[in-house]
Image 1: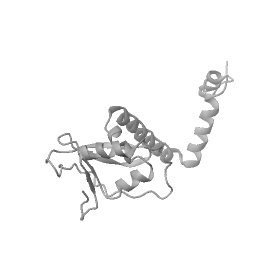
Image 2: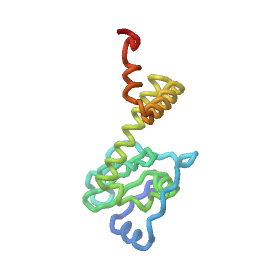
Image 3: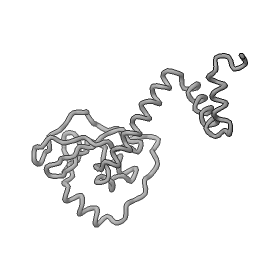
Image 4: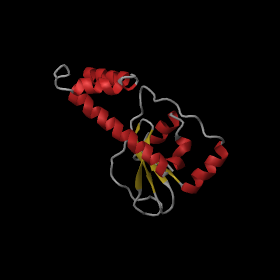
Length: 161
């Protein structure tokens, strides 16, 4: 069911499972497109259009910045305008059931924390310096004298006695 006002999509839980059975094997995930479709997500919690339960938000992850709304009552899923299209463009539309699992959510939370910290570090150090420190970190992580190099760098006077 598509909302004519907001262009959102209501997916009945049982119908999605039937569609998945007919759909065939899970499609491989596609890389992030350059021109990402914009979601019309408001961030507000919604009541289920079918049974009126308050719906829970689930992170999509995998480079997609919106959440899907899931009803524990009737198992339906609400996607705001353009979200179904964004999922289809990445072949993630056949993974909605997986997105509701703790495993998927834990991974999506780790990804969100990582992106948040990258943003903080980029703002703190500047993009160029942050890229350089990341390069140095990779070099250090792969160096056979890693511990000694770190000790040298962190010593206030590595040449002092």
